[in-house]
Structure formats: structure tokens, C-alpha cells
Amino acid sequence: MTLNPSLIICGGGLVENSLAVHFGKISPVFLPLKNKPLIEYQLKFSKLNSFENTFILFPEEELHRLNLLQSNRSSSKVYFHPVDAKLDLIQALKSLVEKYNIEKVCVLLGDT
Image (tube, rainbow, N blue to C red; front, side, top):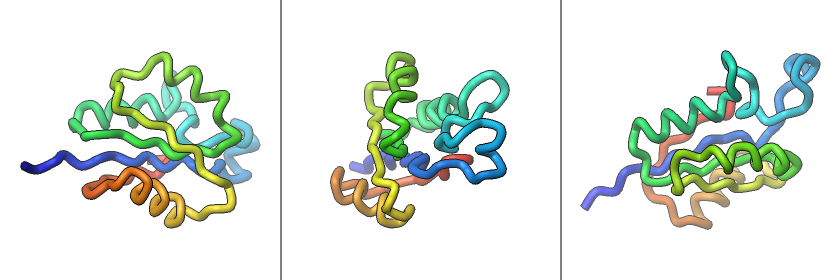
């Protein structure tokens, strides 16, 4: 039996200063695209491609923004994973993969 891969959306960092001037210090997944935050399109991508699970890495200080998304989730297999700001991308991915024992994965960077 072949398992579908899981999707990891990396939004654990904050936008660079050039974008922060316009949008504030937010995770790239919350950047506006048309009339929605980018994360809405990434979750749609996940659903359309039938990923087994979707994990969203986000900064611990962005917890308050997730309340809006959780009420609008289209899938019960979406998991939010807070990231310590001291970890780099590789360390954050490694901790997530080990915690959930993920074998097959597709990774989207936060601003993809």
C-alpha cells in the first residue's frame, strides 16, 4: 500500500523588513494575495492534490492569527505546528518529521 505524501507548509519565520514595512511582522503564509491570505491558497492546493496530512509551521507569536483559519479549515487533517524562533528551517522541518514520523513529504516555503 502506497501512502500519499504529507504536505508541510513552512511559515515559521517572519517576513523581511522590506515587506514588514507594508504588512507588519507576520509569517509569509499570512501575506495577502488577491483578497485572501496566502495560506488559503496553499490549503486549497493541499486539498486538490489529496495530501495525506497538511502540517503548517508557524511562529509561536502568530497563534492569534490561526483562530481565524481553524474555523474555516476545509480538512480535518490540517495540523498547526508552532516553531521556536531560534530554530532554522532545517531544524524545524526535522523536528516535525521526527515528531509525526513522516515518511513521504512535499514542502512549500511560506511564500510559495
